[in-house]
Length: 378
Ligand SMILES: Cc1ncc(COP(=O)(O)O)c(C=O)c1O
Image (cartoon, rainbow, N blue to C red):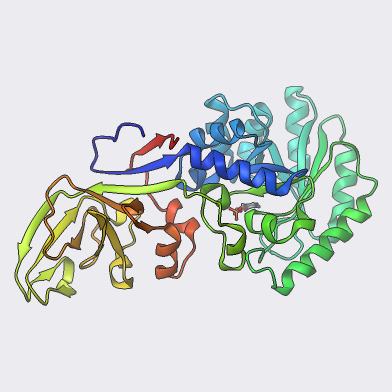
């Protein structure tokens, strides 16, 4: 493992675990390919190191949400194909063309503006992926708009080249959800109407959960995010996740230890009051770093000395307190908030369950103030 940073709160990103998960997914979906999703700073793991690790592990391309994320990767020397998941503001079209990103398209105006920019700078025809909204109702063309958009791309062949058609499922993590079949049928009808597809047109539909639960929808490639980070996409696909390895762990060091008596309140509002004398350890990490304020009241705990320690009182912006009972704890002891210590483990999925959210929100929420340490586990 790499050296720990000077801040007494840090995240360790295990690049070997990440590579293992990418390799596992590649094997699972072969002969379909895997494009890894590295948007939102790779779900809080750090976009550039994760993108590099993904490509080393055999990912065929990368996906981001916004132009700035794609630029960050290119400027770091990542030259793989980068798909930007939705249409971007007109002001960013010049960057998309200049850096050669693959824009997602679904509106005529946007196609026209892209083509105009390609011609203005004399670039080669820009590859575009057409997104079809088959039922998520977020972004994408309506199924009945697809043929005219495809015709428009074809009639601007000097500037635009259709290299992908795709959709996104709203409930892939719930395999029995009726929306899955409906969306599959709508997407199949769109693709059938486009046949014969020109050579080099990728068809893609599923995220991590769909890659696991809808083998027929793996198509040219899957777009895998959460599973590559070793996080279970949802309860409906747990059975496929046994070999995934969590990539991120979150750590802090005890910065203060106090022995306090019974009847003492801890943290803002004294919402936690001791019922017996106990040892309270303070950790220098708080909700500004991504530890949700209410984790304490939802049964949240951390690991110190290989044991679970209950969070006592509300998590504050920069610090939080935990109850260590009568155990000897000293300043500098390591606490694990997410990860393993001894025989115990706390996963981001545990936080998510307690807080009625999803693992995605937990790792995305770990703020930029928390240094990331990139480690190799083997
Ligand atoms: C269009 C699209 N495809 C794929 C993904 C990856 O999803 P997951 O992280 O569940 O694999 C996302 C993420 O939200 C997405 O928006």
